Amino acid sequence: MSGANGERRPAGELEAGVLAALWAADGPLTPGQVQEALPSPLARTTVTTILSRLHEKGSVSRARSGRGYAYTPAQDAHGLTARRMHAELAKDDDRSAVLARFVSQLDGEDEQLLRSLLDGSTE
Amino acid sequence: MNDLVWVPLLVPFLAVPAARRLAQALPPTRAAWLLTGIAVGLAACSTAALALLVVPGASYVPALAALDALIEPLTAGPPAVTVALASAAAGLLAWSAAAVAGCLRRHRADLTRARALVGEAHGELAVLHDSRPDAYALPGRPGRIVVTTAMLRALEPAEREALFAHERAHLRGRHHLFLAAAELAARCHPALRPLREPLGYALERIADEAAAAAVGSRALAARAIGRAALAGGPSGLSRPLLAATAGPVPRRVAALLRRDLGRAAPAPRVRRFIAAGLLVCLVGSGACALSAADDLHAHIEVAQGEASHL
Image (tube, rainbow over all chains, first blue to last red; front, side):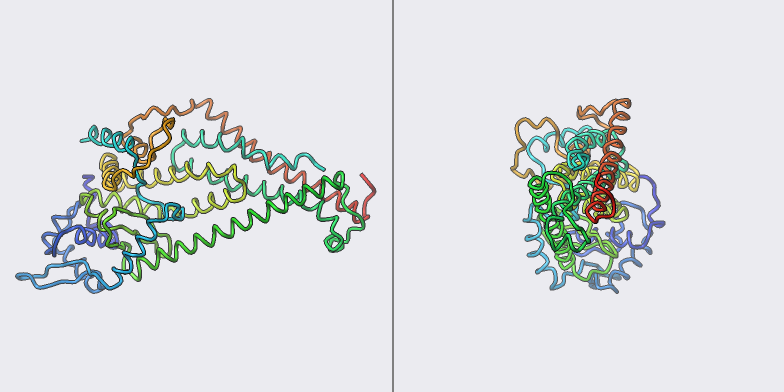
């Protein structure tokens, strides 16, 4: 890691990282588990603060677990319509150029080339 | 008729392949500015040239001639040729104006749709429940990062940070404006279309480099891109057999890993030569359009009876 101290990054970026960790998990996470699921070292108190802030905004829900809380990302009613609309948007191959995708689809040769590049890149 | 009016219409056929070649050799930020600048500049010149072709023909229409107080049609050439050219140019102008308007409308509709999709979220990250890995930057105030659950699960925590840093770079650099500019330019002159693909690639490379800097590791950024692409699986599409180049994703990964995929970039001397040629194309296009406009102005003054016949 770069040793980039997580604490010094803007609050919005830290929130995104925490939220992503919750979404990537299979079940509710305690602040300690969230801390482990983050790439940059953050103090437990910072993680707890971020989680409370996300909870206030309604981005996550929490349930009692032992002496503290376990957090799950909030699934609102909006999620269901969003899924349908997303399918519709993704279907459109010629999707508006203003939404640049992170990665485009690969064909067979690209896939092989990519695998060989990544295999050789282990630091 | 001033023959220079044709230059801005023909230059894109020459300048676009040269710009694509030069962009390959430039750092991504410069490549993005070069491609966007060429696209917008040449589109403006060729549109102006079309307009200049319309005017002499329009002067044969009595109502339009009266508007400009012309007492006779412009003496721009044989009437039949002038009128035919003007009609064709007017048709092309109308066609590209409609294409530009349609393109703008579609962009706006797509953005509205994408914004409705992520809803009223509180924060920069909008997560969509979807089994297909996908991620993109949604421009706006504030800009948002849209990512599917499948994408988040496909990546390690550190790779997710690289993905977010990549999307933040798109938003911070307002890359959607570059893409929109090139898209609109391509609607003005069909020869400008091939600029869009290398521009998209250059913008992704800018964001990749920003991501590598943010996470402090080129290999990590490369892995994030590679794993995200592999998670999507092959599309089943196949490029034409003769395509000798790798697709954009392997090229981006190779660039981050500083690995050569065998695409020779032009030598510095050749690069300077192409750059000089492009500058000549751009300035020449503008100068020809201006000269043709000046010429037309002189003809208009003649037709208004203000000057003697040329």
